[in-house]
Image (cartoon, rainbow, N blue to C red; front, top):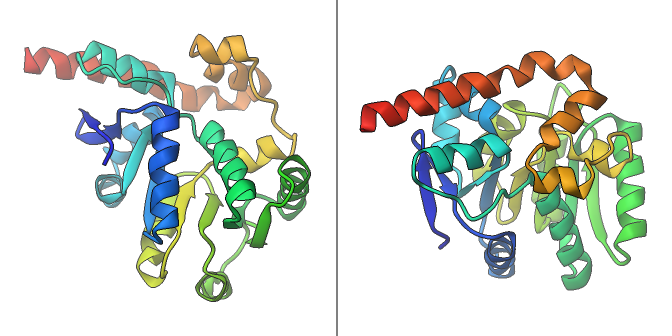
Length: 242
C-alpha cells in the first residue's frame, strides 16, 4: 500500500503519479474495489462542516492531494508530499491504461451533450477505449444507473458530479458493486470535452493552475476564498502542535 501523510486528520497519498497509477492498475487487475477521492483545500474545508462527508473521506481507499494548497500544507506541517496528484492528470492516465489493457470504463456526470463530446474525444484520443456505458449527471432516480453498473461490471467508473455529491453517491452504492475503481473527478469531463481549457504546463508546474481556472471562470472567486482560510487553519494547527 502507498505511504500517506496526515493533513488535518485526512490521510493523503504521498507518492508520485507513476507509483499511484501502478497500484491502481494492480488493484483493477485483481478485481479489487477502490474508492479514490481527489481532494483540494475546498473539499477539506467542507468536510469540517459536514460530518457525513468527513467520514467518507476517512473511509475512502485513497485520498490524493489535488491542489497546490494541500502541497503547501504538507510543507508547513513538516510532512512534505512527493507531488500534486491532480484528478484530471490521473483521469487521462487511467484512460491511457484502459485503452492499452482493455479495461471497461463508465462515465457518469455532466450535461449530456458535454458528456457525449467528452466520450467522443476520449475514443479518438485513446483508440480502442472500451466505453461500457455512460449517463449524464442530471437524474432524480439513479436505480437504472446502479442496475447498469451491476450488469456491466466496469473496471473503472469516472464520476463527475462535483463534490460533495460525487463522493456521497459513490459511498452510497459502492457496497452494491462487485468490483471496480470509482473516482470522483469534478469538472474533468468539461476539460475532456474542450469546454474548459487546461492551464499551460508552466502554470501547472508553478502550482498556480487555480489562477488559470479563476481567469476562465471569474464566478469561482467565492470558492477560492477557501484557500487563504485553509492556510490560516494550517498555521493555527501547526502552532498547537509546536
